[in-house]
Image 1 (cartoon, one colour):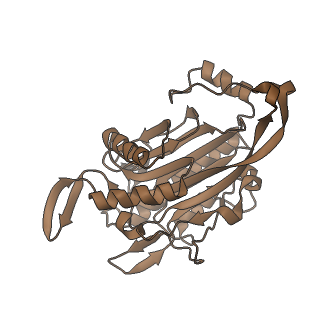
Image 2: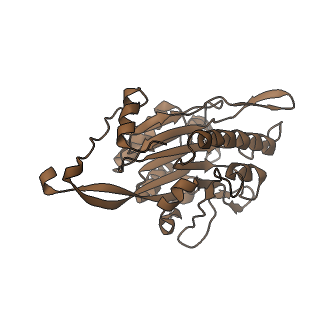
Image 3: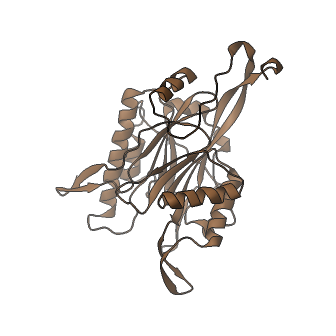
Length: 321
């Protein structure tokens, strides 16, 4: 893993930074007086089709329209109520719609200088990450093939994988996914989801092979409950170095569900944030949460999940100003 600001600068020299901002200058050791604890807030959120899609308004079909203004305003209000430093989103449209989303967040006073838009085999529902921190490197994969019955399929949304430079000069690797929905598919939606989970776990295993002490978050909409094979696959083998720890956050009332299915009238936890062993000591567990907001169902059929990490920033003396 990247352990120092010096290494981060070497990466810049190798052309891996693409987020458009310079790295902060390294503080001078002789002008630094101690360190202070700060927090990094990471959120995952399925936006429920922030894209051009067929919708129904007041009994009428609209073939190609975005979310309604009240829905967008609700999304912005919920995200701005938390003000995450890093925001991973699912079901965003193309790059133009991502820029529209960023501008709406800016209107709410929330700006992200760095971002990554990711398109998999599904070129309609995409992934994106918005960050206040520099993106050091991008290891995302768009087309991941697998076989079902001898026929090649591709992971629908791929894997978004970036490494961020945090304020204390440490690196945080963030891997985000949106696995196959439960909508019926000829190959079997559960079979597709299990295969996508296997591909994700292989990707995570490769990360641990090269960086055993990686500070890693794996997050997103897994579209299954924690007892199902696809989610268990992602967790890995308990007790192994590569096992991912489930941050079982709750809302303000102690509830754990993140998704409501109106058709089945069912509440379930299908959105997750998982952490590597090396990152566990940085998690402020009593600050992690599932966000419950009065406008949650206007915004989406999902509720966002938040993890809070502690970092240490240099404190400078007056002479260093």
